[in-house]
Image (cartoon, rainbow, N blue to C red; front, side):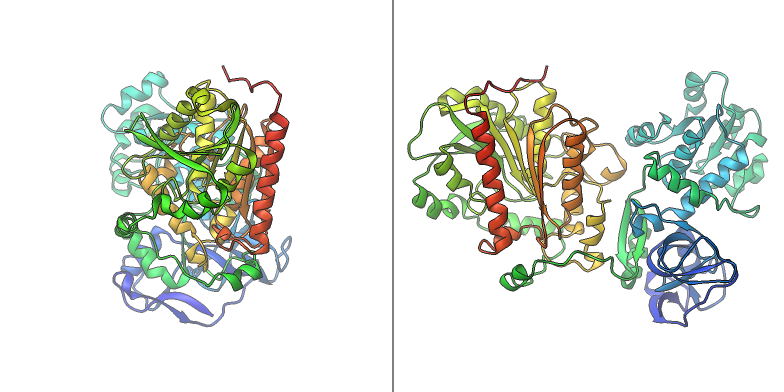
Length: 632
């Protein structure tokens, strides 16, 4: 079997993937075909020769996979079961591993997320057990937003404890979302904690190791009520307990976290994946401090839905290179066809085009306005926001490919497409604000445009689909004239990259057609800035994070089954239904992101027909009806 190993100490370059003998389970152990393995700090230390002088050495203590062999004495587990846990021999980063402690993977979890959990949750529960945290306890956690700290917060809250947690200001919303009371770390900690809890706290846990043990002792009323997992020297100096598992592991955490996850009471950590073959690169990224979340190695491909066979024949495989700022600049500097790409469609349909520049929060916004050959008063309209991941593209892109120019003539509608400002030149909610400004101008000038303001459909594809959803949220919250409906085509809704489809269609998992998870992660970094997965960006910038989807227009949502955005599209539709809204959802079997480029493929024709049918029904149902009410 293949396994990660090093035969000399040093930097990431000493790591290699080599053939080694397969292990077999002992008493009470199970062997798994590894699907994912976590990378921990101990792996870095081992590689540098700081833990064990033996050579060669294997790596990895955390793994998730499928049971393929049982040791003597094992009960409650069968071959084929999905489990996660610990490899006591430190050889989990391999095709096969033996787990000495394990539990079933919760049904809602994929292998990569499961492999990211064992060390953090075991450490957290071990610390809480040592401190005796229970219902009614008041616990202070120094470093509440990291992997161990956030796990400790959630386990403590589940026990009924009151939790106060230190974090940087950017992490306060995250800490609060887990049920804790966030405070800033640094000078003045005593005063800030006592402002929240005048009598101090019952116990304190130091996860960050930032030299605060004297303050924690003061607040908890004695060194015996404090535990650190990060400050060994401080623990010796101040008489505080230091825990690294010598007194026994809290292996029951593996089962407990499953119960919390399935009941919706545990927020999962962000995960960044690499294939086993790229372990050296994963270590290199970790050492450069560019890690966002837990690093996990994918061992063996995660199964993916197959691509549509007709698409495979019609569209040659052309791998999109990894996005960089230099590549983005080159893409933008290339000559764009502009309105010229629509000349054929405009000539065919007789649709007319004009431009208006309207004020926006980040500067003027150009609107392209397309009207039917014979305009009339009270026409329906579609406000369509272009794709490009919010970092590229222009207002003309996709209008012909998705058939929108033809819709102008066929439905007798007006089409408005805004040239919003792109990231990273503007970031966060500024892009949504641009799009909303154009929509508000359209409503305000509806009579001039010959448009019925109650019959405006808000539309977008890819990044524009996410902006359309965000614009609907912003418009609802500001009490604007409600759009008639939302048309969200393969929308980019969630910045966290934690769905199963995001794992399946990552470059690390072998995906090569269309955009991969890595491309989308780059785009979100441009839109929100690095570190956004651990922060709480405004929901109008990231619609999947919106806590409330009530009061939104009915929606058409679609995606391909073989693309990154599949699961976030499904989840958004599900949440609209749960909030009492209406959504029509289509997942096109075998379609990758942008499969419409094969316009004559049967799947592409079917997708176009379904959207057109929905639009016809929406417009027909609204004719003669009163305008949708604005939300107050």
